[in-house]
Amino acid sequence: MRIILVCWCLFFSLTAFAQEAAVKQTIQQFFEGFHQRDSLKMRAVCNPSLRLQSITTSQTKGAQLSEDQPARFFQSIANVPAALAIEERILSYSIQIDGAMAVAWTPYQFFINGKLSHEGVNVFTLFQEQGIWKIISIIDTRRRS
Image (cartoon, rainbow, N blue to C red; front, top):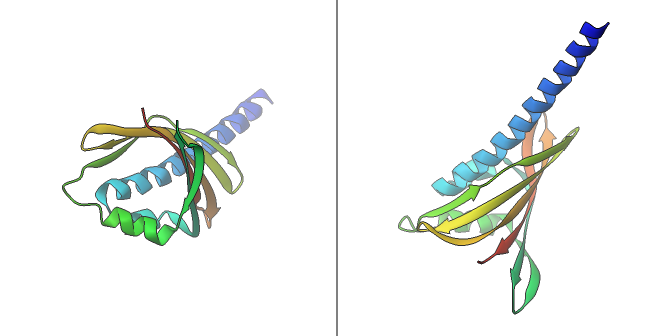
């Protein structure tokens, strides 16, 4: 009986690990496209109803919420000049999954031409469509040092 219980627990642990790895891979592909300025690669891991929001905090204005249109966002990434080096470094992943929904909390630092521009946290919400994880929303915080 114990062997069956151990096997059952091991199976569910491996399944959960595989799902977390798939969510992480989706986010990593998004950033590969971001760094390569490849909006098609980014769109491939996003649901068509993608929602993009940012919370920017400044000492003078406090916290402000803004929203971007996906088409405008993807176009802006594709149009980043080649001479401008942009890099978003994900510092860690905290992934929670419930059935066909996943949420990933990813602290980051954003660099322009090798210099820290700002930092914060991304929160990705994903939906599993036909066995494939797609990003349905991204909200991030942005703080300047």
